[in-house]
Length: 128
Image 1: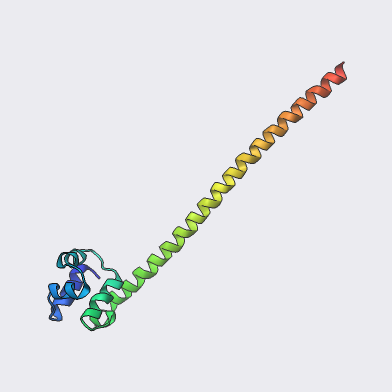
Image 2: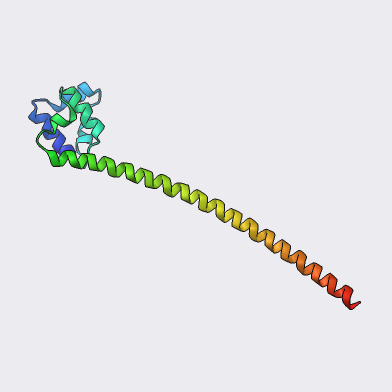
């Protein structure tokens, strides 16, 4: 739901924006800025509806597509959060694997140096 749509719902129910702002405990300017948002959070819609004595869904009466959009937006948001958490977790694992890989490469290099030194010592013993 856009802020403009919510504003229309408020005014169509016979309330002034100043009254709603006062009942919400915010300034009319704060309410106005929220109503200029492209989309309004469902919890804010519920707060406004509580003030005017309706449920979030009854204030959106007859607009099934809007309800589905709000629900879908919430589901999409939750999926994005889960995917973000998974990505961050995978990035941590990748970082740990890169550190372990670097450590193993260092150990391998040291081992090769020792083997090379040992081989050179054996060759010089065999020659001498």
